[in-house]
Length: 149
Length: 149
Image 1 (cartoon, each protein chain N blue to C red):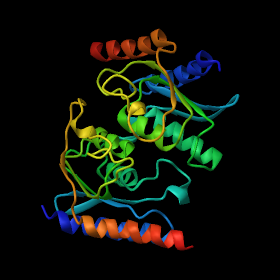
Image 2 (image 1 turned 90 degrees about the vertical axis):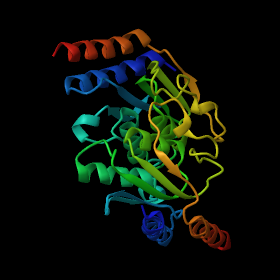
Image 3 (image 1 turned 135 degrees about the horizontal axis):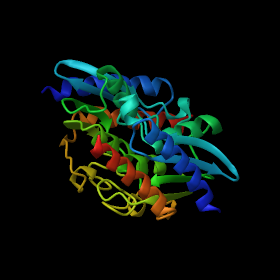
Image 4 (image 1 turned 60 degrees about the vertical axis):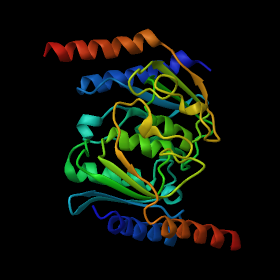
């Protein structure tokens, strides 16, 4: 699996979020050699607590594959998932998860806690720190520009 | 706050779910004396891992109130929230959560763990066991009928 290639696709979606004034987080879901779901943060635009990149990508993948189970798919996201998104990953039975930057405040794949190590009866494979520097740079630049405004 | 009254409204939505062949879980979100969001389990119909009662109710409330923050609202759900839904409750900054029946398998407000006691920087008030027997009876009847079929 070429984790960096797919994380690059997630980064392109993070850039799209930043261009729309949203915290730059992007996500793709991959099955084999195909992207089956894409999402990027839309919380402010959609005025919705649910509009995280991972949720939108999972919704698109479930619609595309006509199944709530994504058990032969992997998820790539530029920022460590929050508890809602980590829980959605468990519910959708994703096979593996790659994230870029850690999120010390709400990250739930190792930072605040690791939901994938709890007793939910399902554990996706987990890879952290993929293209971490690129993912972090997007967030750093976004918040620097925000402070300047 | 009349918790049993609002849980009764959530139970009516659980019955609607059962009628549609879904595991009977219902949810309402209340602000003052008004219901601002309703949801019931639609996982099979929508073929979506995200189509839990709480997620659909939070989406409706965010749309209705035009805000991702639901900080003056309370949520009533017939079954203890899973990690995805407990995380969505944190993201939406709901003021309080009432649930009916415990969920030993994925419940994340005290059963598998309690996400509201972790270090996420936000803690809604939590009331468990509201109309617990009625909520449990719905689930028991649903799974009994399913086994008979």
